[in-house]
Amino acid sequence: MHKIPELKNLLSSEQDIIVDTMTAKLQNHFYNSRNKVILVFDGHGKNKSLKNIEVKFASTDITPTYDDADKLIKSIIDRSRNKKLLTIITSDNGIKLYARDSGCNVWSSRSFWSELKRKKTRKEDLLRESNEKPQVVTKGEIEYLLKEFTKR
Image (cartoon, one colour):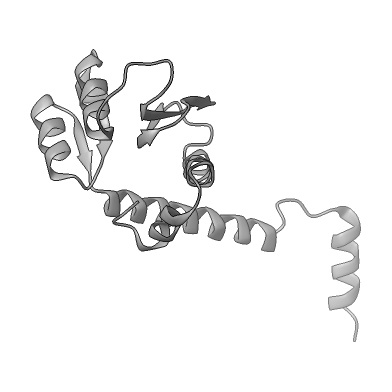
């Protein structure tokens, strides 16, 4: 979030707002996807799951406590059975190296955010096009158009 200008202003918000906003953005992107997403935050909070999105905090009241999000991410990588299936999205160089060395795919936060925006724009364009061009034309519409365009 620190590297994405559109998200940086969220950092001054309350934790719940940050978590809910990021979760909503990811749910939009991963809607009907089989991908499992784990969103990791520094600090203390309550872990939660919403469909295929898990929110994890470095420190909670009921799970092991990690000093920071980096250690939690490394733990998630270490516990994964097939690291080649993991994609780690981060701008932290230490996490990037650890993930690559472990066999994970790595994306920078900026690249991922750009892809998210590109896909959202594409979806909006497709939706706009589908609203502009009807998929089915009724018999009544055809008769009306024929009448209108054959008038002299």
